[in-house]
Amino acid sequence: MTANFIYRCTTCGKELKPGKPVYLCPVCAKKNRPGIPLKGVLKIVYDYDVIREDFKGDDIFYKLKNENFIDLLPLKSIDSLPGLKIGNTPLYEVDELEGKSLNAYLYLKDDTQNPTLSLKDRASALVSAFAKEHDMKSIVTASTGNAGSSLAGICAAQGQDSIILVPETAPQAKLVQVMMYGATIVPVAGNYDDAYDLSIQLTEETGVYNRNTAFNPLTVEGKKTVAYEIYDQLAGDLPEHIFIPVGDGVILSGVYKGFEDLLQLGVIKKMPVMVAVQAEGSANLVNNLDSETHSFVKSKTIADSIEVDVPRNFYMAAQFLKTYNGIGLIVSDEEILAASALMARTTGVFAEPAAAAAFAGFLKMKKAGKIEEATSNLVLVTGSGLKDIQATEPLLKMPKAVRNNIKAVRKFLKM
Figure 1 (cartoon, rainbow, N blue to C red):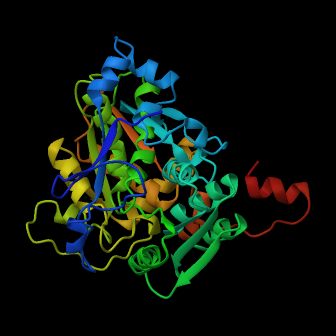
Figure 2: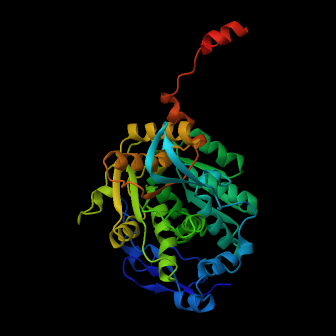
Figure 3: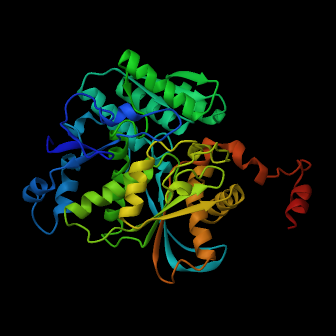
C-alpha cells in the first residue's frame, strides 16, 4: 500500500494530504471562471526518498515493476484495478515508409490495443479503482467520445454506474460504444467545453465522483503508465523525440509525469523531447505557450478528440513543456488525414484523426529536416481509427461491383 504522496497545486504550490476525493486546490479554484483554463490543478507527488530507500539498487525500476508500480500509484492495492487487460500495449518499429528508408528510428506505441481502443483506459482504470476503494458507485465525465466510452467500459467491468455528458456532434461510433457498455449518456446541445462545465456542476450539486480530465488529478497519474512501458520496452534507451497529440494537455502531462517520476528516482538522467502536436483548427495550447495574455478561440478540426476551445490542463502542460524544453507543433487537417492514411497502409496501424496528428507531426518535422539521421523517435498512437470512420471517408472511393464471374474479376484486377 502506498501512502507516501501528497497533492501539490500547480498554481500556488499549496500541498494537500490524500484521503477523500480531491479535485482542485480549494484556494485557486475560487479564481476559476468560464472560458479560461483551470487554475488549481493538482499534481500528485510521491516521497521519492522513501521509494529509493525501499527499492534501493541499480534495478530500482524492475523492482518497482515487480510490485506493479503500486508505490507510484495513489491506490491502496493493485487489486482495485479492473480485470481487463489495460496497458502493456505493443511497441512497433518502423524502418521504412512506402518503400523508402527513414534513415532514423521510428517506433509506434499502439495504445489502440486497450479494451475500449484508446489510451484513455489508463486514466479511467485508475479513477475507477480509486472510486472502488472509497465505496463510490457512480462516476461522471464529459467527453467527445473516447473518455466517455473508456469510462463506460471500465465501469461495466467494475460493476459501477457511469454518466457520460457528450456534445451532440460527437462521432456516432463512439456514442455506440458508450451506450453498449450500459452507461447513461446525456447529449448536450453545445460543445465539449459546455459538457465539461455541466459535469462539474453536477458533481458540485450531487457529489457524484468526477473523472474529468485535469479536474481529477488521477487522470494524469493513470496516463503516466505509458511512460513506464516505453522505458521498459526500449530497455532504457529512450527516444530523442516523443510525438503526442494534444487537446486538453492531460496525455502530454501524463507522459511527462511518468518520466519525471523516473528522473526523481534516478532511473533516467534526462527527459526525452516531447513534441506537443495540435491541429491547426484547435491549437489553443501551442498558440498561447509564449503569450502572457492568453487568447483562446473557438476550435474546429476533423480531429474531434483534440478539438478543445479551452485546454483545461493548460497550466500544467505549459509548465512541463517549458521546464523540459518541449516543442509545440501545429499540423493541418489535410496533413492529419494524409498521415492517417499513410500510417494505415504502410504500418497496419489504423489511427483516428486525433491520434494520427502525432504521426503528422513526425512527418512534418522530418520533411523540415528537423529529425536527425539515426535518431530515435516515438509516436504515441492514442486511439483507433474505428472510433471515427466518417472522418476518413473522404479518402476512400469504393469501386463499383463487378459481374459475378471470374473473367470480370480478372479484368478488374488486370490479371
